[in-house]
Image 1 (spheres, helix red, strand yellow):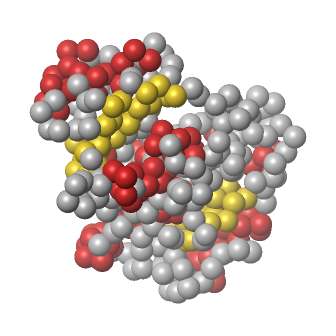
Image 2: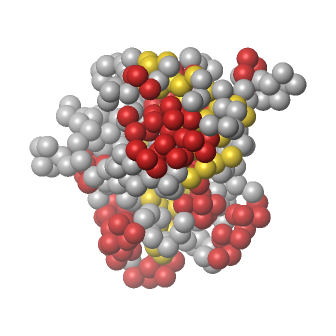
Length: 345
């Protein structure tokens, strides 16, 4: 069987969707007549497309040309027409929008699976009802249900970085394996972001314990200011052993570099899921979001969550104005769990 996956727009969601993709790839009922496994192609926006290039379960990735948030009916019809003769048997639409379901419909793919909503039931052949917000399962199970896979079938997402790519990325940014990676950004909003001083305190502890290593901050261009704030809070004699790559790497480079880290200190973010899928030690701080719904999926991940009475609120900014879920999560809770740089690689 040949399957088209319409990918989500968030990096973390893209990583979590790999559990479904891996299950499809391993599903004996979807094999071709000659015994080959299911052939999976992914149609993804530019921001998440690189994630799928690191999965052995994905045959090919096509970057969609659409502008974020725009319907672009004619362009979607053109893309659908370009896929029409390529023999797809099934499409699985991961985003919940109408526009995301249009391309498989225009392509005439016989089986089109997705969750119902936003007036798109008519363009899906198999529209599943969404669980209620209270009953909403972990994200990998949410995606897994689109393939009729139960939780016990779904494996943790896996990303694979070739040794040569890792070496090349480290050389380009003058890094040695074993550094502490820090992903302090939170695209959703400040209610998911640990204070700068807390990040700096943990980074300081790591640098003092590992005198031959560095702390490296990751993120997009929007995170550069916050990363700079963290660097400025480090003791002066340690600042030369820390650097910010926020806005300086592509996602593919960030993935390759992350595979060389001894561990990652992070908020609930896309890079948290990337590191978990790379089997890197993860220290994940949760504030307004839920570690039940979007946990780092790895046996090497540690979650730090106070579970206050007001948590999780899922708000961009603290509705009570104090963000105690993050401020009261003391850096010592994390620094006590740091692994030696040599142990994490």
